[in-house]
Image (cartoon, rainbow, N blue to C red; front, top):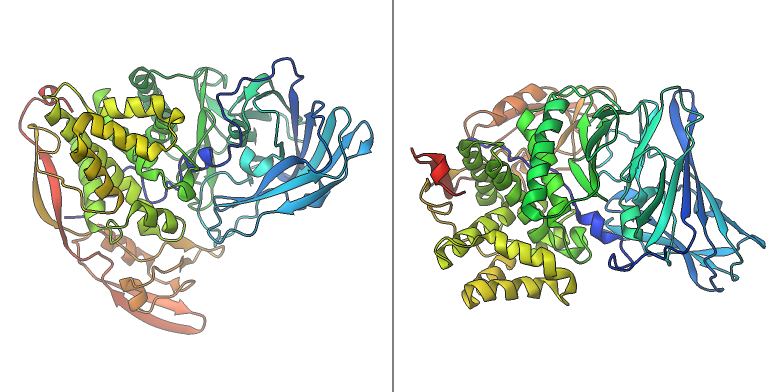
Length: 582
C-alpha cells in the first residue's frame, strides 16, 4: 500500500491550541459599556522597502490600579513563537502623574517552548488614563527556523503580519472591553492596506476578551483580498500572489463554511482568513478570533484539494472549539483535532463538495498513518508531554482522533437503530462543556448516558492508547474493509533548502533508519531528487543518498519506510452513494 498523506498534512501544529491558551478572563462576562474604549494604534516603520519595526501605542482608560498590582502581561514565548518585543525595558507607560514606574517579572523558561509570560508590576498607583508605547521587531527567519504555529510577527514583501500573542502587551484586568483599532500606514507606499481579525482597516468599539484580542491576526502592506472589497461575511486576505488556485479554494471553502454554519447552528458577523507566504515551509494553519491563518511557500504549486481540506479544517475549529489550557499543555487535541479532522471529511461530503470515493480515500489515509505510526499506542497524557518534541506523537490526535469519532458514530448508529449519530454527542459537548467542572469527565458522562458504561470504558481505553476496535463495516453497509499490510514513507527527518540553495537534513528522528544509517543534522544531500522519487515508489524501496558533511563525502543507504503493519483499508461498494447515509 503506497503512502498517501491525508489532508491535514504533516504539521498542523496546535491549530486551535493557542486560542485557548491565553485566556485569563471568562468570555461569558459582559463588557463594561460605560467605560471608554481601549485604543490600539499600529504604525509600521520601513527602511527601504522592508518593515524593520512596528510602533505600538495603546491607550487604557483610567484603570485605577494600586501599587503592587499587575498592570500588563505579554508572552515571551507562545507555542514556540517568540514575542516581537525585543527590549521589554523600552515599554513606557504614562499617566496624569508622568511616567509610570514598573518592575518586570518573568516566568521561568519553559523547556517545551509552549508558554512563558512577562508581567509589568506597578510601583505606584495609577492616576487617570494610561498611554503605553513600545516597539516591535519582526522575527528574523533563517533556513534553520523551526516550523511552528503561525502566530509570530514577520515581514512579507513590504508588509508584515503577526498575532496579538506576539504583538500585544495587554492589561490584566477590565475584560471584556470595547477596543478601537487604528492603523498609521503613512510610512508605507501608496496602495497600502491593513486588515485584522476584527475587520478591514480601522475598527471601533469591537467588544473583545483578552483571549480574543491575543488571538487576533494583523496584516498590513500590499493587501489583496477576495472579494476585492475586502469586506463581507467571508473574506480571504493575502499579500504575495499564490502559485495555486486560491480563488477556487476560497469559493469552495466559502460554500463549505455556509454548510458548517447551518450544521453547527453557530455564526459570526464575519469570518476572515489570512494567507502568509514564506520562502520555505513554516507550518500549516492556525486558528484565531473569528479567523485563521494558513501558510504557503512562495511559488509552490499545491494540490487543490489539499488546500481546500486545510481551509475547511481550520474553519471547523471555529465551531468545534476546545477546552482547558489548549495546545500541547492541555491535552485536549484528542477532541479538538480529532473532531475537527473527522468533520473535515464528513461535512464536505454531506455538503456535496467531495465524492464518496474521496470520503473513503481520506479515511484510508488516516488509517494508514494510524496503523503505521510507531507512537499510535501512546496515552493521551504521553502525547501531551511529547507534543512539541516528537513529530510522530504530534500526529496521533490527527489520526487516532478522527477514527475514534468514526467508531463512536458506528456505536451511536448501532445503539439507536440509526436514529442518532456522533453529531448528537458533539453538539451536547459544545453546548454544555463550559459549565462542566471537568470537560473530560463530562464527555465521559455523555457517552455513558448514550452508550452505557461500555462507551465510557472504550473512551478510557482510547485515552490510554489502546488500539481502536475498528471493523470492516465501520462506515455502514455501503463501504467494506479488509486487513492488509501497510507501510508509510518515513524519511526520518525534514529536509530543507538553505540560503545557498542546498538541500540539508533537519533534526533526525532518534532510532529511525535514517539515524541508524549515519545521517546527521545539517548534512547536505547532493541527490535530493532520489529521495523524492522513492516516496512514490513501492513501499520498502531503499534509497541511496550522496552526502556532503563539511569536507567529507559519503553515501548512506537505508529504507525510508515504516515496517509493514496490518491494518484496515476500505472501499466503496458498487451502490448508489445516496443510500449510504455517511
